[in-house]
Amino acid sequence: MNNINRQMAAAERVIGTTASLCPQCLRRIPAVLVAVGDDVYLEKSCPRHGRCRAIIWRGPPAYQSWAAAGQPPPADVATAGADCPRGCGLCPGHRQQTCCLLLEVTGRCNLACPVCFAAGGHGDDDPGLATIETWLEQLMAGGGPYNLLLSGGEPTLRDDLPAIIRRAHARGFPFVQLNTNGLRLAADDAYVRELAAAGLSCVFLQFDGTDDAVYEKIRGRALLAIKKAAIARCAEHRIGVVLVPTIVPTINDSHIGAIVRFALARMPAVRGVHFQPVSYFGRFPRPPADADRFTLPELMTALERQTDGQIKTGDFRPSAGRHPCCSCHANYLVAADGALKPWAGREENCCCKPPAADGAAKARTFVAKRWSAAGNSRNAAVPCPEVVTASLDAFLDAIDNRALTISAMAFQDADTVDLARVRECPLHVRHHDGRIIPFCAYYLTDRQGESLHRPRPDPERRP
Amino acid sequence: MSEQISQQNLVCVKCRVPLTLGQVTLSYMGSNFPVELYKCPRCGLVFIPEALATGKMQQVETALEDK
Image (cartoon, rainbow over all chains, first blue to last red; front, side, top):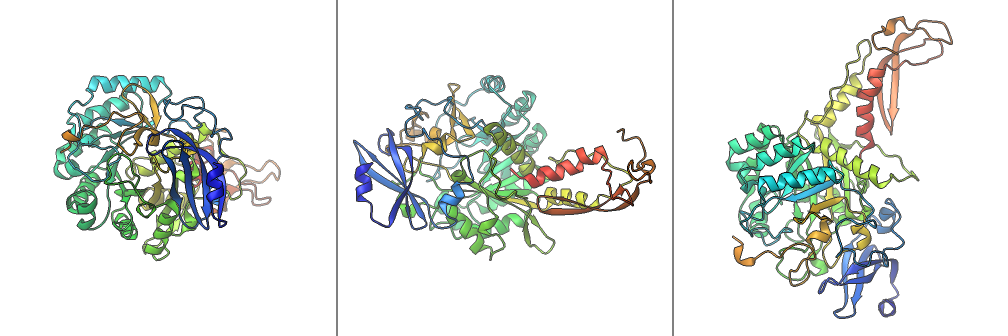
């Protein structure tokens, strides 16, 4: 990295060293974190393909103070686990247990989005129910239960999705959520009823904006009416909904406040908004420039600006059980007049960090409680006669019916991947060969669309 | 202590006087919850029933602790 150091201007400071991948060949290479004012870049040089640099943090809050909220980075990240992440499944060098496990239950899709982390729309051979049952058995034997995320492709193309959910519960997985574009949920009431009866805990609904121009650009067709119908059906059948916007600069980064207002108007059916700044793996039109990226601090700042300060950057904290630069979240109670009040308590200046197992367990429990439908998540408290606890009852009722969780996850692609972050990842994917692989390591692709772990989709099979 | 025992019959061991219902504020991580619990009118000792501690209070604590 000496050459890189020499080339840096005086205003630039190296604030960390780590390991990354060459976006051309996915070879593991050393990398540095370079601060330029409030911005931070990941910079690296491949002996074969040369130097590259990508923005990973733009503006306040300051990267270093935010990052300090997490576990200290592994000192050996640049040297240990020489085959990381090519050698995944989880290895002794991985520093986090599984919180949420993603199962790809189909490769088929009924949209053809220009942006798709899963590069869906390929393959006719869904894994059979018996195969999935075997996966579930293996997962329980291997450390489960975890929160399960059924994904694809578009999982609702499977008629037997309710049966998969039933089997998951029967095998002891308490929380099952569904990644979906909502098309079938909007159109097929009987199907939604079946999903609810099977015990679907939560729908993770792709939701990119509040007007159709956004959907036409990102998803290739107008979808807003479909999204509204899907939310209404989930509400009717008491399935919690989390809106999941992919934020793409210049396309929908001005819609962030409107998405929050849309969610507030549909509480308690909508339990939260989970923003995902666009990442460039899977399917994307061209190699990304810095202007194509939208970072976590920009999202927090946009939330503050676009909600007229109702949401504040200072409300957000890194989420437990993962690298602080991968995610952020804030929880709000909504007053009768529509005002938002952050309700999560916080021990400031706490010097103790939870061990990895505790972090993953806390994150699992939190997600299950906050994203399930209202009234489904609360344990019935033992009544306490003879004492008056109305304030506790009111608070518990409020977090059940008038709480909204705003969260975000910054996925890493081949340009931005930091192996210190990968090693902290609790969101994992079950490879069809049985390996458990951190999400970003599973989905990232090189410039030619080749993945480290995932079979390349056949472009001829896309719809 | 069994929850079957009526709290109305509880006596403060230190002061030897019966507990009476009174205003108490439960505080945790910056949030305050005014409740009515049995407490000693003399020294202020508060009796928190086990069902309350392991039920609603624990739920509120968990919610405030966030993830």
